[in-house]
Amino acid sequence: MTSEEVLDEFRSAGALLEGHFVLSSGLHSGVFLQKMAIFTDPVRTARVCGALAERIAARYGRIDYVVSPAIGGIVPGYETARALGARAIFVERDPGGPFALRRGFQIPKGARAVMVEDIVTTGLSSRECLAALASEPGEVVGAACLIDRSGGKADLGLPLVALVTLDIPNYPADQLPPELAAIPAVKPGSRALPGA
Ligand SMILES: O=P(O)(O)OC[C@H]1O[C@H](OP(=O)(O)OP(=O)(O)O)[C@H](O)[C@@H]1O
Ligand SMILES: O=C(O)c1cc(=O)[nH]c(=O)[nH]1
Ligand SMILES: [Mg+2]
Image 1 (spheres, helix red, strand yellow):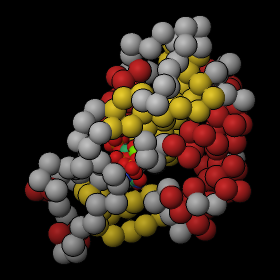
Image 2 (cartoon, rainbow, N blue to C red; image 1 turned 30 degrees about the horizontal axis):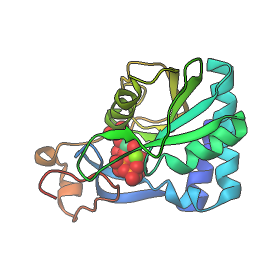
Image 3 (cartoon, rainbow, N blue to C red; image 1 turned 180 degrees about the vertical axis):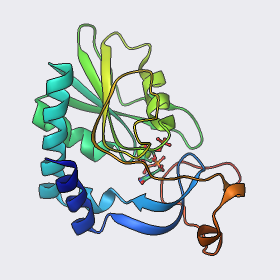
Image 4 (spheres, rainbow, N blue to C red; image 1 turned 120 degrees about the vertical axis):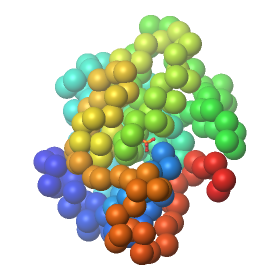
């Protein structure tokens, strides 16, 4: 799939939103990719995750485990794992706490894993996910996401394969442009932000 074809999936699913959003990192943006508008449609999800799996296989070779950060990563992680013929597991957090593998999930010795995110903005969630995997016996060979909205600038400490790379502006709360300051902000994701 080309970048334009993937973006068309987001547009036609109603997943490309404009307004005033508080992101997981606490930064503000006028654009939000509501990936759940994609993930509620299994056929659309299979199309985009199948394309991501092809990129992952071409870049990293054999993959045994896909690991994703909850909540947004669970569905694309599962569907990408299906296309790769791999297992799908996820990290989750107790409210406000760090990500951890629970439920008996592990990356066994000798296994090759890839971390699959839905959206990368600053890379914070991806880095936290990777930190939770550091002591696993198996190897995390790289990362992947559907959309990297950092313009390729997010540093995960591992290679990142993105189906689409966009450079979407984000702003600290005290540096909002007037058009964002004029409208109330909404916080769509699951991370609890300080003071929220
Ligand atoms: O690169 P970052 O700056 O970390 O931003 C991207 C993260 O934000 C979203 O998750 P969020 O914490 O909003 O919760 P969700 O997964 O439940 O949607 C998204 O799913 C990524 O995990
Ligand atoms: O940075 C985020 O929190 C974020 C951005 C985005 O476009 N979509 C999303 O689900 N999360
Ligand atoms: Mg997330």
